[in-house]
Length: 531
Image (cartoon, rainbow, N blue to C red; front, side):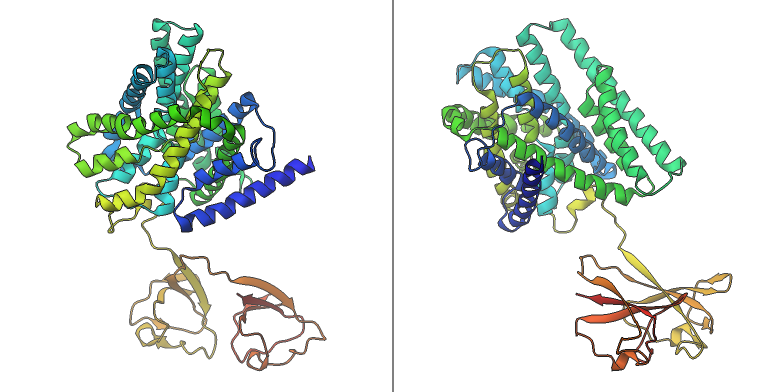
C-alpha cells in the first residue's frame, strides 16, 4: 500500500513540474500527462501492468463528472449567450456531422464495417473541454468576435451528444436496441438530464444562500455532493449525467453565492487533479508497442478529421450566421480531441459489441495527434489569422473572472501626538496610490471630504491596490524572553538581517504597529516578515 501511495505522490509531483515546464515551452500539458503514463506503463521504464478497462472506465467517468461540472461552472453566461445558438448547433448538429463524415471516410476509404465506422466517428465526434480550457486559460488567448466563448461553450457541452451517439451505436451493434427505442432513449436522456441538472443547481443554491452551515468548508462538501447527486440522479432516471452536471455548473456558476471564490479555487484544484489522473491513467492503459500496427488507420482518420470533417461541419453551421472566414478557420482548428474521446473508446472496449479493429489505440493516436499538433499550433494560427484581441481579457469568458480591481483596506489609529491629528484631510500627505476612505469616530462612520478634520482617537481606513502576484512574503513569530538582547532597545537600534522587518508587535492584549522608536519589552511577541 505504501508503495502505491508513494508512486501516486511521485506522479502528481512530476505532473506539476511538467505543467510548469509546458507553460515555458508552449507544449500542451495534457499531452505530457499521457506520455508520462505511457512511460510508466508496460512498454515504458517502470513497466506497471495495468489493463483493467472496466476500472479505468469507472475512474474516468468520475473524473469527467467534475471536469464537465467545472466547465459549466466557469462559463460566463453574459458572454456566452451572445454565441449560445452557434455553440449549441456546433455541440449537437456539429458532432453528428463530424461523426457521420468520419464514418463515411472509414467505411468507403479504409473499408471498415458500417457500424464500426460510425462508432469511430461518434467516439471522436466531440471536442474535449479539458484540452480547450487548458489552451485558452494557460495561453490567455484573447480571441475576437466572441470566439473564446464559442469554443468554451461548444467544447463544454458537446460531450453528452457524443456520449449518447456512442451508447446508441454500441446498443445497435450488440442487438439490444431498435430504431424506436433509440428515439425514446435520446429524448429521455436529454429531458431527464436537463431536469436533474436544474434541480441539483436549485437545491445547492438554496442551501448555500439560505442556510448557515456550522463551519467553513461545509459549503465545498455540499457542492461536491450535489455534483455527484446531479450525475447519479440523472443516470438513475434514464437521463444523461454529463449533461446534468454541465447544466448544474452553468446555473450555479452564474448566480451569486456565498464563498464563491473558495468554490472556484476548490473545483479548480479538483479538476486539475482529475485531469492528471485521467490522462496519466489513459497513458498507462495504452501500449505504445500497439501504435505502429494502427498507425496507417489512426493517421488517416486524424488527418481527415482535422482537415475535412471538422472544417466541413464548422463551415456548414457557422456560414448562415455570417461568421468571418478567419473565425471559422480558427474554430475548425480548435477542435481538439482529448480524454472524453478515449473514455468513449473504453466504453467500446468493455461493451459486448464486437469490433474488428483496435479502436482504443486508434483513438489514443488521434488524441495524441490532435493535442500535439493542433494544441501547439493554435496560438500561432490565431495570430496568423489576426484573431487575437489585445483589448480584452479571455478570462472574461469565465465566471470566476472579476471586472473589479482587487482592493485591500488598512486601519490606522490616530493616537495622541499622531502627525495627522487635528488636520484636514486635504492637508494630509500620504504615500502615492493610498486613499483615505473612512473615518471611524466612536459609533459614527464618516465618509471623508477634503475639509473633514481628523481628530485624536479616530480610526481611519486607507485603501490600496492589492498585489496581483504572489509576493513570497513569509511571517514568523518571535517571543522576547528575558535572555533576548533586544529588551529595552528601540527597533532602530536592533540589528536584523536586511530581508527581515518587524511588521507587528503584540503586547499583552494590545497590538502595536511599530516604528523605529518602538521599545521592545520582555514577553513581547514580534511578527517578522521576510522573503
